[in-house]
Structure formats: C-alpha cells, structure tokens
View 1 (cartoon, rainbow, N blue to C red):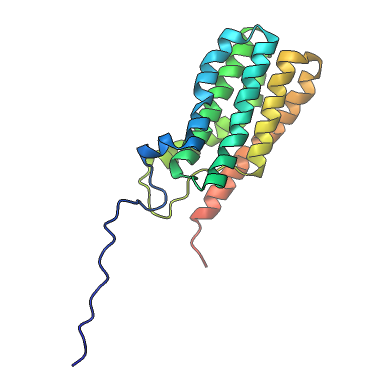
View 2: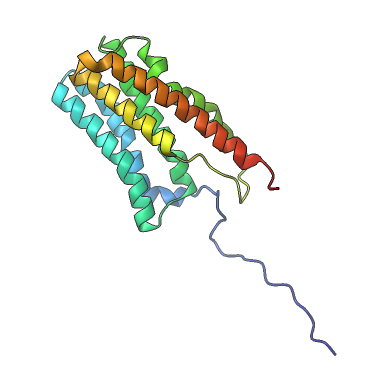
Length: 198
C-alpha cells in the first residue's frame, strides 16, 4: 500500500510576501533616513533667505536621497514601504523648495512645471500603486537611472537659484529635459511590467 500523499502545510508565518507594506518597516534605518527629508522640507522656508543655511538644508536632503538606497542595499533592508516613502519624501521636499523660491522671487513661475515635470508625470502612477490591492508580484515604483539623473539636475537647479543665479536658465532647461525623460521612463517601465510573459 502506497503511503498517503499529504499536501505541504500552508505557510502561516508572519513574514508577508513581496509587495506588502508593513508599518514596522518605518523603524528601519534606510526608511528613517528617507523620512528625514520631510522635516527638512518643513525647515527650508524658514532658512531660505540665508544662503549658507539654505544650501545646508538642500545638501542634507540630497545626501539623504543618496544614502537611503545605499543603506537599504548594504543592510539588506530594501522594503516595499521604502520604495513608496522615497518618492513621497522627494516630492514633498521638491515642491516645498520650489514653491518657497518662487514666492521669494528667486525662481521664475515657469520653473514650477520645469522642475516638477517628473513629479507631475509620476504622481498618477504612484497613486495607482498606493490605491490598488497589492498582489504578491505587484511591482512598486522604484528609482532608476533617469530618475536619479533628474533628481541630480533638480538639486543642481535649486543650488543655482540659491547661490549662482546667472547659470539658472541653463540649469532649468537641463532639469526640465531630464525630468520629462524620467517621468516617461517610469511609465514605460510600469507598462512593460504589466505585459504578460510570452
């Protein structure tokens, strides 16, 4: 008589599958570094009139943007929550800085769509990922090469507006081009990920 074949016991562990957002991941160091850009955004309007202080806040935000991803890879703490928090923190800081500099007359009004083109293009995609139910294989928005390039151009333009206004027109043009390219690349990558495997 053949032994009975039993089904493997279901995995009842507490570790959720990929794509699941866990509140506990907020305490991970990479995510704390990401969240640091939120208070930096709140601080910027109060220090914007002081060139050294404004540059220090922008530099701290730029450093956190580079450091959070490096820490996540180094420590093995890349999480779905982190991939959602990162663009939210980026957008909060970028919008606050651009709005402040426009109000102070250090950026022209046209700088808003030029600098925030990536955020404008990516916002519907991010909202879609946040609103839909998370399937185990569901991709979440992640930074890519064009995105990092756009962030670098964005920071460089803000630095120009604060400290070197004579190069601002060129910096704005580069920032606008890289931002549009990054926004299109996010949509292209997301649409490709939805195509059924052949």
